[in-house]
Length: 350
Ligand SMILES: *Cc1c(COP(=O)(O)O)cnc(C)c1O
Image (cartoon, rainbow, N blue to C red; front, side, top):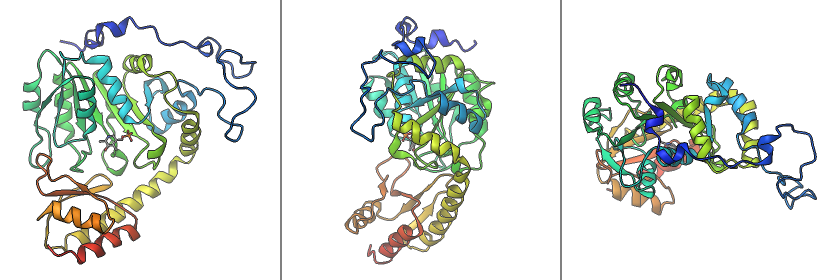
């Protein structure tokens, strides 16, 4: 059975006509624009931002296509990856009928978004070393399973997922396989964007929020077939990426080579943090990380977490999460921040 996008789509979505602005009909940049009720006299912010932004962010996509080695029309940009997650559920999952498969422990937003959209969730836990169980995942698939979310490198465990397992899912599931690569820049693993030509059922997500250092701008990327990208563009809010964000992201893309230094610094700091954390008797395991954080198993995670809060050091308590008993997740900070954390931990009395 081949992948059939039309069949996967919620029926009413195929009938939607996109919001159309006059500027969809006139693509020139010069002209007298009296079509959108904008304020031509200026703005209260530096005289800028008084015009609506490009709804399809074409300047960004052209540059990003080069950086990522994909075609511009295979890119969707969202108000954070979170918007792409939500739009995928709205496009493909019928509320109260369809389901998605999640692989805990994993990123929390998939479940939140499914809840908001009234989409049932099937959970197939990872193995104790946080790898997929592809046979069990495929067994969980039923006729109403529309999306499987795979996060690699995985949050909160930090490890990369075996490629052959992802291939097995891609080859045997007729719904959409989302590979969330929010942390890919910190990994030596090639992106699954290189597989887009082979798999019409693949969608790869990345974000500007982590290695690119632009979390506040709220912009996430999705890469997929031209057909899937068209659907996301059809149902997104027309101006989902603000003009200010577009301006700053273009700046960042012109500066894309600087990301290598940031990643190098992060990895060096991650190694330092790991070495130092290993010295504490209450730290029993530090899991291998391909991301900009470490998951550590401790004795008395909640107590350590609360102690650090008192010291105004905030880490993430994951001890209630399945397969993460007594685990804490620590983002890699600067040397100053990491030293402050370590100094506080030296003074910690279990
Ligand atoms: C941080 C993160 C994202 C990024 O979300 P944005 O909405 O783009 O900021 C996506 N997926 C995972 C797994 C993450 O940890």
